[in-house]
Amino acid sequence: KAGVTQTPRYLIKTRGQQVTLSCSPISGHRSVSWYQQTPGQGLQFLFEYFSETQRNKGNFPGRFSGRQFSNSRSEMNVSTLELGDSALYLCASSLGTSSTGELFFGEGSRLTVL
Amino acid sequence: AQSVSQHNHHVILSEAASLELGCNYSYGGTVNLFWYVQYPGQHLQLLLKYFSGDPLVKGIKGFEAEFIKSKFSFNLRKPSVQWSDTAEYFCAVNAVSSGSARQLTFGSGTQLTVLP
Image (cartoon, rainbow over the protein chains, first blue to last red):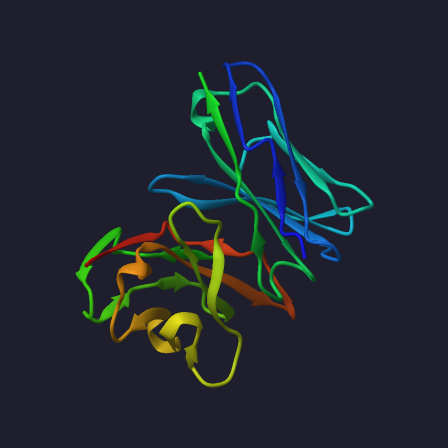
């Protein structure tokens, strides 16, 4: 069974640009959560989608947005990139909502903002 | 809002030493508790979880954790570590309110280095 797939794995952008990251969950999983991982900060919750609806949202500015499609695939977008947005962005899927069971993580998309 | 604290940022042990990693959370109600592990070059994976019942839970690879409600703690333990346990360990919590649980909140992680 294929795991969570995130694309692209690595990308470099400059300040002011925007970026879209993609996540394909494990087949049958309906929940997708996004986290930002930085050294010393751990994982900061961005948002969670379940059946195409945003279920929860973390404390990130409106430049961070996401969506989920009918096939459960999800995208997150960051507009007007800042240097501080450099991080590993992790996607995780679960069968039900994230609160009820195990999260399965992808390998992440490493974003570098210059 | 719920929060999770992992006070040990980096722990260095020799093989066969005992391990205890601290995790404290701030939420007065019902919680679900998790430990995740990230081995070098690999993705995060679940080590163990606690929802209810016996507060001492056992996970994979000989790890266990004890939920102490009065101390708001969920410490991870292993009696004898191996070099292959070198990894970053994350404690995670979600609060259950009105029958519905919120998103999973992670601690900042503890890097464990086991010396051969």
